[in-house]
Image 1: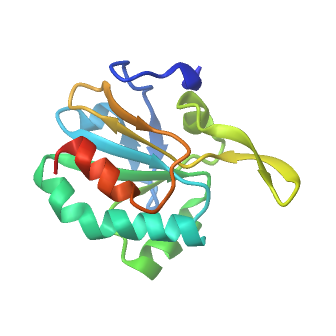
Image 2: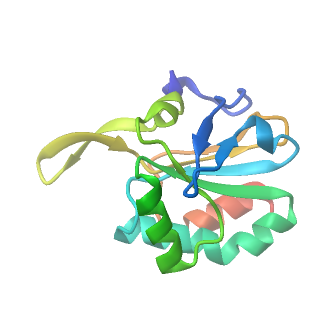
Image 3: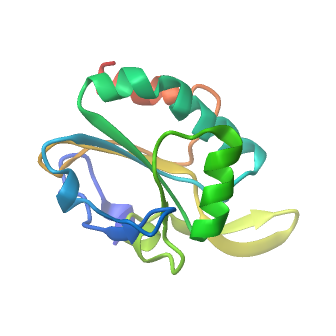
Length: 155
């Protein structure tokens, strides 16, 4: 289903716990833009660089009524450590069973060092104030990605 997501589609609804067990849902963010970024794993080099990029740009992003949320299949304890280590000022959501990752079409068969496994393909979705997809970035390369997102947001 997720692969067919197109700009202008209604974003798949979600309700997930954040690092503190607080429930975050798409519905609760109506009226704000959302940068929903999916990443493979807490505290790995690419994911750290991406998270720190969003951290460093957050003030500019928040000025235009936009929220940043990171999503991975890590648990709350892992998220808490990652947030603390890098002073991340935005919530990280726990999609431990991959339900939301699958809904957005980012849970993929991956290949590393000759081993195939299922995991999250780094992807970012910008969702507008009405819950529609405004921009979709798949197979994200970390370098320059936050700039791409800011350009799509017109920061």
